[in-house]
Length: 254
Image 1 (cartoon, rainbow, N blue to C red):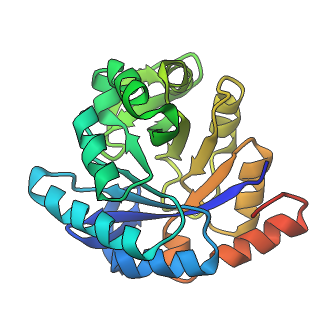
Image 2: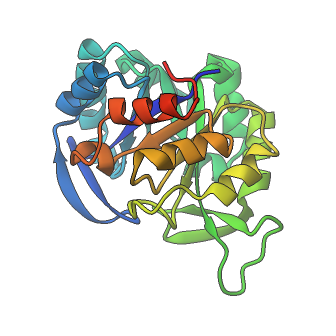
């Protein structure tokens, strides 16, 4: 199996933004232009996350997805604010190939099965924003699921949740370390390994990439795909840099 390299675009009101731990967001450009650039650079997929996900911005996001799908020929995953199977239907019609769900599935896990039954598991990516437990919170794995950009803990064990979601029909797990997000200090390999040991569906590592070597580490920890945002947007490295390093380390890439 080859490891996929996926640039992620956090979209707010039609613009790409990026911060650290989902705060202090700054403008990173036009999503269609960036997605086209990554397509040319050899990205295997592109992921859009609607970080505002308000009803007022929903029409803007559909427009961004539609315009991107016309120009980009790699698979496009779109998440953020997806609450129903009908939301998935509208995003697929706009041009998305896969759709990410997060908060709505935590509130009502049956949504995972509903989407998988209607569209197929290959369409559904479960996004898990997880962090190490702190204070009085206790989970068996030591990691908990969060919502609201990592600001609100749920007390749900992240490893158990990923395993349950896969059983319900999630086709992939996008694991984002909220502790590492935007820090460029490396992926949370312990968390990645813990979920890899319990989940057989493809696992996407997210949060913390800072050097091409970090992507190698994630692949060796069990990631089927590696995802990053700011290091690509602001020119710290290119998709090709990452793939070249992975090839040199004996990791199969496309």
